[in-house]
Length: 285
Image 1 (tube, helix red, strand yellow):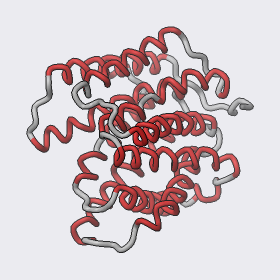
Image 2 (tube, rainbow, N blue to C red):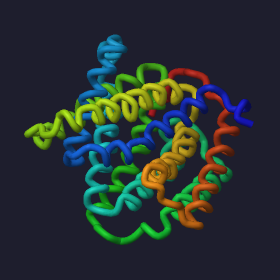
Image 3 (cartoon, rainbow, N blue to C red):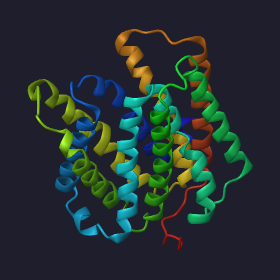
Image 4 (cartoon, helix red, strand yellow):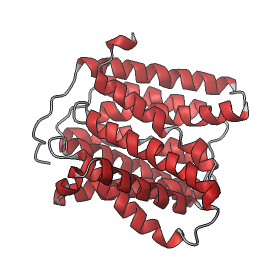
């Protein structure tokens, strides 16, 4: 069945897998969350500038809204993780498909069907079951930040899709620069660089730069809503890596919830593979 998936859907799945390594890698770095966010964005900005120097010339006024959505997504998620439970933060961030389903028809002229809504609800139910014993009302400020992260993540996906005929990569590059500049006051003094440096390089290149570049390539051909639903496997994979490293055993409801999310992702992937979107001029939103 995997061979029925087109290459752009496979790129989205690869993106989610690489994004999901963040939890394990961040736990390996002995810095504050904002300092980590700023450092990995600095690394990402430098790598993109070196391997794709032409992206610098493609930064324009149209890149700015998406870049701020990128920075808001990264920063608000870090704040949410600090002020509420990690489960709350990642679950609420992945409310993004709801916003995309509402905004997409207006901004991108990409319709949302009742089947789309059904898959969104199934995926969110699966994530909720997976984190059943960890979700709580702890940290109201963190919950608000997590909801904000979900909203900004939705706009990031929409705005990158809107720039499909231009340069989604320019959005990512500028977003990393903005994130770095915001985090700069929290990045000093630099401590334990020998211990943290290698993990930061892996985090900045493998978990951030590579997945966002392949996401930029895929979003040109896949609807924003499809991309967000396929990517919802990330919050399931994130704690799975931790479980493998720590030899933790998942609870029954975690297995049920994870199975629902994986099934939903596969269903959406197969549908998206049959409905590849061509690159074209973005609609006037």
